[in-house]
Every structure is written in C-alpha cells, then in structure tokens.
Image 1 (cartoon, rainbow, N blue to C red):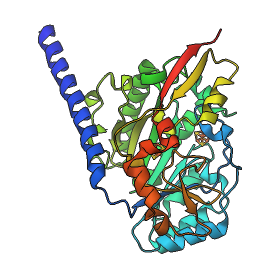
Image 2 (image 1 turned 90 degrees about the vertical axis):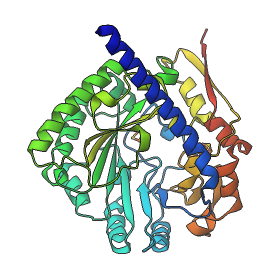
Image 3 (image 1 turned 180 degrees about the vertical axis):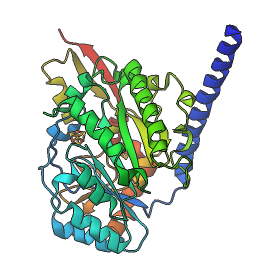
Length: 380
Ligand code: SF4
Ligand code: SF4
C-alpha cells in the first residue's frame, strides 16, 4: 500500500516537473511573437526612499539619489495613460506610502481609468490606510512585501518593528472587514532563496517553517470563509501553471528549484512565493553583500550568455529620477530608453533599444549579469 502511494507520488511529482519545464519553454518561445512596441503595465517608482533596510535588497547600495519622483513627471505619466486601459505598479525600490502624494495619484488613477497595483512593505499600512486605499476603485491589486515568515529571517529586514507585531499587522489586514468582501486582490509575497544560495547568501527560506506558516494561513482560510469571504474565483487567474488552490497540490520540494508558487487562499487573497533571483545582482550589490560583517563567503556574479528573450521587458519602468528603463530589475537605469522629462512612455516603448533588449538580452552587460551565476568562495 505504502509502495503504491510512493509510486503515485513519484508520478505526480514527475508530471508536475515536466509541466513546469514545458510551460517555461512555451513562455520563453512565445516571447518571440510578442509585440514590443507597446505595453500593458508600467512600474513607477514614486519614491526610492524606504523605511526598511532589507539585506536582500539593493536599496542601500543604490548609486542614484534617494528621492521622490517629481510631481510634474507623475502628472505627465498619468495624463499619457489616461483612458488607455493601462496598469501602474507603484514600485521598483522604495516604500510608496512614504510619498505624501500617493493618495493624490490614486485619485487621479480613479479619474483617468488607470489600474493601480501598489507594493508595500506593509509597516505603514494601518487598517485605516488600507480602508482608504480600498475606497479607490483603481486599486485592484496590493502586493504585500512580507518576504520573511519567521522571526530569525525578519532580522534581515533592518526594521525596528518586532516580528510578532509585523505578523499581527498582517493578520489584522487579512481580517479587515472591508478587505474580506473587497474585489481588490492582495498578494502576500514570500521570498525563496533556498534553491540557489541556501546558507551562503542569507539562508532566509526554511522549508519546515514555511509549511508551518502555510498551515496558519490554512486556518485563516476557514475563518475568512465563515466571515463572508467568497470561496470561488470570479476571475481568471493570470498566475498560470504555478497557481494552486489546495495546499497538497503544491510540489513538496518546489523550493529546491526556481519555481514560483501562487496559492489562492480566497479569490482576493493569495500567498505568492518568488525566488530571490528576481532582484538581480548588480556589481555594486554584490560588493555590498561581500562587505557584510558576518559574510563567510566571497561572492562573484559570473555573467551568463543565454539564448532566450526576456519577458520582463514587457513591463517598462520609470525610476524616481525620471529615467525610463526596460525592466524593474535594472535599478540603476543602465538600460535607459530616455527620461520622462523629454520623451513619452509610448516613445520609449517603441524604441529600437527596447526591442533589442527584449529579443537579444545577451547583448547587454546588465542582462548578462542579471542572468549571471553566483559563485561562493569560502573566505580565508
Ligand atoms: S525589499 Fe522593499 S522593504 Fe526591503 S529595503 Fe527593499 S524596497 Fe524596502
Ligand atoms: S535580463 Fe535584462 S531585461 Fe531581462 S530582467 Fe534582466 S536586466 Fe531586465
């Protein structure tokens, strides 16, 4: 009986691996057919200031100035996107709630029919502010940058807030009455560094504690349903093959690979596990990591040549200094297409450089480093 169960599990896991590999190949190949002269979504960094100092984030090693985006730049972006069915993701680096004009921009998004997807580290997001955000019809998705799900790894975030307080804040936001019945979706983002850098870079993802956290989430699910949360999805998910509705559908060893996991708690609430590689590894950030007092390894990022186009270029990004760059990983703007002061988003989107970065990223140093391989050498 046990042998049969084991065989069945092996078959399910093998099928799941194959499905993921095929979906990745299909997604990469489909990019050759993507139109590169337009975009649906744009990242806008309304401030590069942050009240956290996460060790896994290049924010504190940034070369460019920490600043809020000029109001005139933001008004230009909003006017250009007016009534064009576009989405603004309010994030690259920085905490958007630190920009005092954040709610003014949400009001303009309402008026101009632009969808808004803010990302926040949540520390400033009181229930009152969440309620205020949910009053804006433009806000259809809020990304909670929760990232670390235990006390030990929360220390990596450089915040004075005790972890219990942070967790209680998450619970309060999840059980906020307005939120439970809102159409606005909330993603609780968790970062996975297990598969490639475990114990060497940060060691922040602990599988056992992750599943404990997910069990807590499961108890929240039952409570939410009893409080009026909708059980079935009204909308189609865009999370594709990595989308799960039952905990036991998630491959048990997903964290060992670079897979994402999008676990739907209720249709308007999910846990989203991303792998750490998505933060990129610019040289300055690698130097910054090597300079850490407790770092036992010297890290090198070896640039890699890779044949596939890059899907990230579909979503251009405006940094707080106005530079329009190809993707949100290019945090210093080395792949800049111009500045919003002098060109429009449409002009940037239609530029030859953007098409080149998308189809042939290996021609660009930043991209080769972004896809680079991290090598760890034990320090003497
Ligand atoms: S990861 Fe987010 S919260 Fe942490 S320092 Fe970077 S921008 Fe701030
Ligand atoms: S490969 Fe280049 S375009 Fe793609 S995410 Fe990395 S830096 Fe951005």
